[in-house]
Image 1 (cartoon, one colour):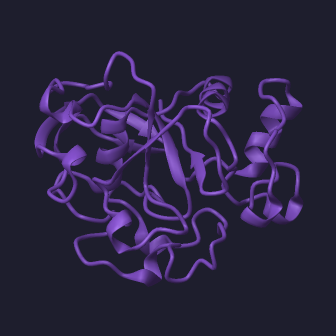
Image 2 (cartoon, one colour; image 1 turned 90 degrees about the vertical axis):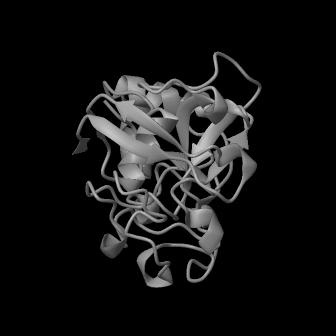
Length: 222
């Protein structure tokens, strides 16, 4: 895990309505996984009885939790509750949306985890992925300011929060945790099929909690 110190950062962007208004958020310090949770780690949870075996397996997208060839790829085809269950089993939790964004962009409001200029060589995206996951940490040049990897590309990542398009207009300044309830959850980070615009650190995606796909995984925080 990498540590993200307490303090303020700028959250949001200017492109889409649901990432506005840009606002200042103050967070307590926290830890977040350096990498997306892998098939191998998820399989350990299954073997220990802490997680259910994956029900929606597609080896082509790197989501078979017991396939040695995919062991270091992010686990995918996973619904929100399964991600939440794994993090709890590991003594962690899903990051809040605000925590995820600060871990991805730091305190200088950068557009991408590595800076403000897109570089396809630094991220597993539509430009080079072949619509497949890669082993976690395969793009070290794309690290966030705190050293977290694959915060853009590879897979979208579940976070803890419920989703509301207008939440930023009413979000508290300190340690926001999202709406009290909704029909949708938030995913962050873009995925292997994403273009330059989708790799932005402020990009949000709404998904039903029981949705899954080869493009969707997670990481944990503490």
